[in-house]
Length: 115
Length: 112
Image 1 (tube, one colour):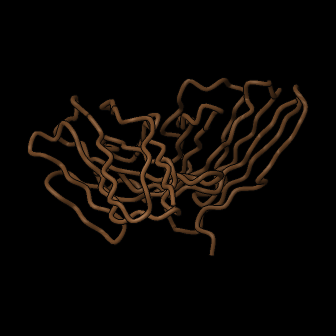
Image 2 (cartoon, rainbow over the protein chains, first blue to last red):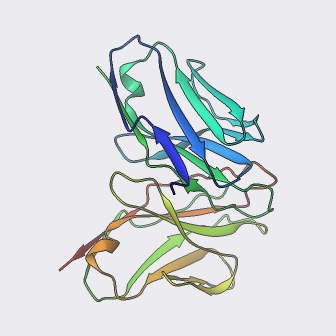
Image 3 (tube, one colour):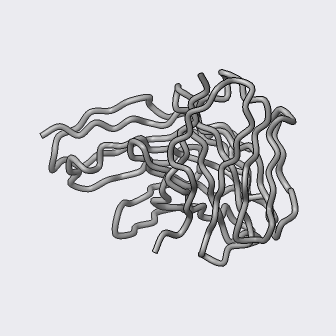
């Protein structure tokens, strides 16, 4: 059983297009995240949702819009894709609320290439 | 959140013990120290977490001195499959935010 899954694994698209990446977790966690890992391997948090409510929104262009239809899903929609959006996007989840740094479980990543 | 500093890369040979040290001089009282491992083309994976002294699990040990300004991840008898990037993170993830800040990580290369 895959704990955190993402689709698609690879996404190649043209500049200006709109695309979505889907994420699902079957761990029963309350909190889900989106991270971006660039070519230099830096991993930066973009968004975090707890029970479908946005709790972290880093300085991400508003072309990026997360959507959480339920607490098991957190999708990422990107409008007007730019070359600089090329990266690997990771979804993660955690139980949340324990008062310590929660263990986060990461998905396999989606490699987005914008041409 | 406290900033961490760790070596960019390390080399080792199979069967050796590897120690990766992370500096976190500005660690706060309620911060925990957590290590993640990332293999190529995969998402990071939790290895170990501690607050003080020593923590050991089936994968690694984590040594934290009394002042907590640094920590050392110890991997016993590494194998080729331990080649990965290792991230040290410090934070409390207070409440439900769970915000993690990943640094550059240490790329460990295990050679035969």
